[in-house]
Amino acid sequence: MSQNLLGTSVDDVVRTVLDADPGELFVVNPAGGTVEELVDVANAYEGELPTIRLLGDERTLKDVTDDFIVASNAANLVEDGSLELRLLGDDTRSSMLVTEDRTVALLEVGGLVGGLTTDDAEFAETAYDAVTDDWAAAEEFMLRTPAIDRVSQTLGENISADVEEDFGDVLASMETARGDGDGLDEVTVSLLVAAKNRVLLYDISKWGEDVGIASKATFSRTKTKLEDLGLIDTEKVPIDVGRPRLRLKLADDRLEDAPPAELANVAQSVLP
Image (cartoon, rainbow, N blue to C red; front, top):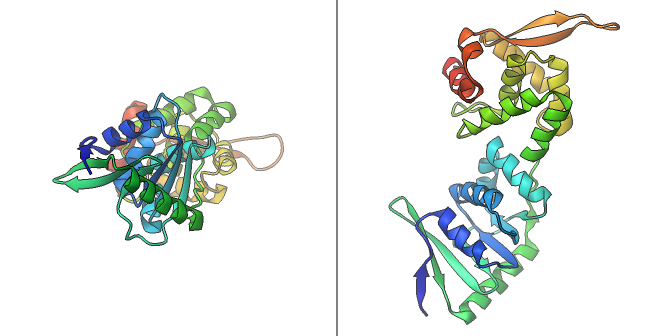
């Protein structure tokens, strides 16, 4: 049984497998970094994607999808029918990619990830049958984050094209969007971009709740936190009926002068 090394990175391996034009691709027990790279490659892939069936450890999937950037891009694939997520009942399965005629073991050595594949038809058939059975018995993993394409589209339609562009630029400058000290979260980014463009708190929080980012209450709490830190401020805007609305604005000169691509870095340096 001969073996071949497909590549020395996850994206190399995944692209090679996708270029073989499989009807479906099982991704079994991937590490968190593998999930992230798979989502990146699949979103950028210019050919026709197979149905990607990811069977992963629950803790790994929850940790990876706590990052809005990864989760919202994965949601793009879920919404267009290219990606399905289920929970691996037994995480003793090796990390591998499986198609009907190919099995690729993902091996990590010295910081490099290689894809070791075999051309043995009997082995490939056995692996495919086993993972198909695992998939049929597995529970669905619910991804509750909205797709980034839908987030961007509705932001442009309901708020403004400038806010949509700034939101995308800020996210593109960030490695992660978790809000756990390693990066800002999606609500904070939304509010900072809204303040940069002097958007009403009501409008950005209603949009955020409608699209599925967070509740109005979460937007309100985060707004108060950013006010207390001196990052944003508000001014009252009278309306015909009811209480005045609050217009968001930046309160820190460093944010005011920062281009969108640098806004996250400046804000992160101010946050505790």
